Image (cartoon, rainbow, N blue to C red; front, top):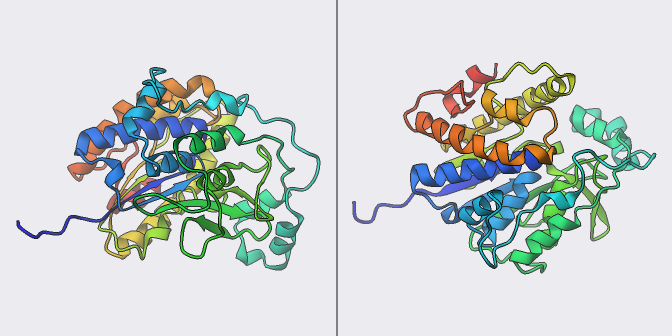
Length: 336
C-alpha cells in the first residue's frame, strides 16, 4: 500500500560470555536469512556485555556475514577478526585480595532495597586483574575511537557504575561521555575476572550484573518490533550432570526471570517482542563455563541450526520448547 509506514525495529543483544557471542552470531545469521531483514536497518540497538561487542560492530558497519566468516576462520582481506583468544585463558587470572567496591558495599548496607542480591554480591567479590584491551582494540579497529557516537541509528551500551550500582547507558541522552570502545570494555568487565574500567574517574563493570539484556530500556522508544537475543537466559533447560553446569543453570533461571519481567513491560507498551535463547541442545554444547574458548565454534554452528528452527516456529506463532524460543505471550509459561 502506497505511503504505508515501515515498522520501527529494535535489536537487543544480551550478556553471555565468549560462548554467548558465538551463539548470537549464529542467531543473527539465522535471523537475516529467515526474514530477509538486514540488522543494520534496525532503528535502535542495545548491547550488554558480550552483546555490546556485537552491537558496536553492527553499529559501526560490520556485517553479520563478516562475523560469520570470522567464526569459520575465513575472514576476507581487510575484515576485522573477532579473536577472543587474546582475552586469555578460559579461567580468570587470580583476583586481587581486596573487596571489589567498598562504596557499593556501603550503598548496599545503607539502602538494601535499592540493589539486587547480585549487585550486593558483586560489591564483595575481589577485584579482577584481567584486561579488556583486546576488545577495545577490536572495536577501535572498525570505527573511530572518539567521544561522539557516529552510528547511523542509536546505539546504547549498558554497564554498571561500580560505586553506586546504578545502570549506565552509554550513548543515550545525558550519559557520561565515552568512546564506543571504552563503553564496550566497561560493559564487558565481569567482576572478579576483569579489572573495572575507569571512565572520567568513575569505575564501571559488566552491565549484565544489572540485567541480562536491559530490554526494558526500549519501553518508551516507540518501536513496533524488537528482537531480543539472550544467551544468558533459557526458556527450556537440559539436565547437566556436572556441578558447575548445574550452578550455571540456576543463575540462568534467575536471569530468565528478569528477562521475562522486562519483556512484559515492553509488550504492555504495545511492542511485538521476539526472544531467542539457547535451548537444551545449545546448553549441552555450552556446558558450565561460558568463557570456554574451546567450545566456541561448536556453539556457533549449533546456533545456526537451532536458531533457524526457533525463528520458523516463532514466525508461525508456535512455542518451541526444544529450542527454547517463543513469542512473548509464551514466556511466563515457559519460564515458570
